[in-house]
Length: 300
Image (cartoon, helix red, strand yellow):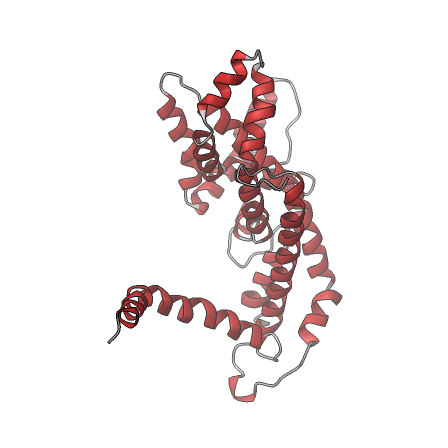
């Protein structure tokens, strides 16, 4: 057997566990779900499964609940992603200094991203509660009236606040990027008389744009797929319907699949969401050439 053949066999043998799991639990369910989205499948009709063409996809765009949920999801993404990016980035800049006890502060700010979702939701429901909730208690100290955080008017605001609280993962990535900026640049600019704000605008921000770009893309993808937080924040059961402002697109798909058992229609909803994510990702990638700075890119 030739050396190249032996190397090839050894390589695929090494990656075979991952490849088998990817094909069995990743690619096959993905393609099978795409196939089911063109059928009348509702969970118990495999024997009389029939092809219905684009009917399920046509239903998506004529379903007022689906279109409302998509609009609310885009609004939620429009606010939650920028807020999460700014909060995580500013905290990372502050945590990049050299102060006493810095490791403790880094742990404190990163810890929320490690808290299980259910525990975090229960905690925030107590925070937002109108009966002795911490937020309303603090507001009361300043003589302001209580706010119904989980009501119709502030439901989305509460959801955005809760999502921004768990920005610890982004902080960690930003810190890694900040540590990669050469200190010589700061020292040289300081010698030239640049202020702290000028160093931040001319050095930190441009060199951090690739990291911001990465977190921006992952933030968009994650926010468009949020479903558990709005369900549990305004309800008590997995199949309960959240308050109308927090009725997001992934929640609608979840309801259609598991509550009403419209599996084929639910698959069509998810594939439409996949197309929306792809379109937004392409837009961000296309526009990134105007604001993302790469040190190795000499053509700009």
